[in-house]
Image 1 (spheres, one colour):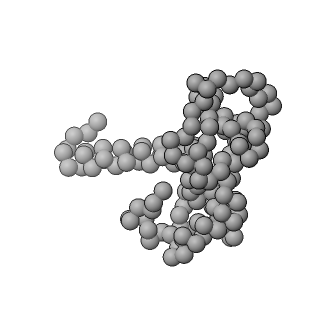
Image 2 (spheres, one colour):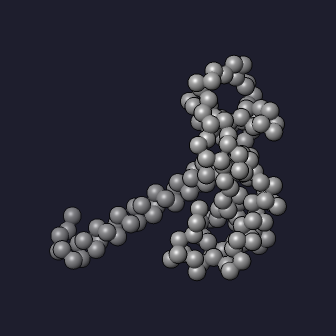
Image 3 (cartoon, helix red, strand yellow):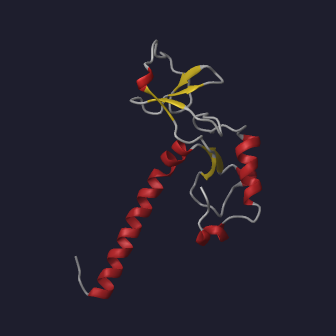
Length: 147
């Protein structure tokens, strides 16, 4: 995901190189949470949360990347969906602070879009609450309404 212009100053000047190292050298082109490969379309089961087919390992995996204990014996074609876009890894800050990457980039992880959204969900909820709170406060300040 591109960096917003107003947040660009938070990142180090060599961020593209750091991101490449984390995604492709440290993580070997796979999501560090679930193992989905970078740049490939992935087959997923429609009704199961996060269950996907690992073509390299020739096995079904759950949302955390573990091989299913009881893989489905038969899967109908209408129960499978292929991702519309290839999976593209992004470098995520595990503590949501882009100004701190940690020693040897321990605060960074290569995540697929699904894992990135799951990881960022609490932070997104917090920011949504904060923005609504701020808008209400500004409305109270300039309109004189309270409540």
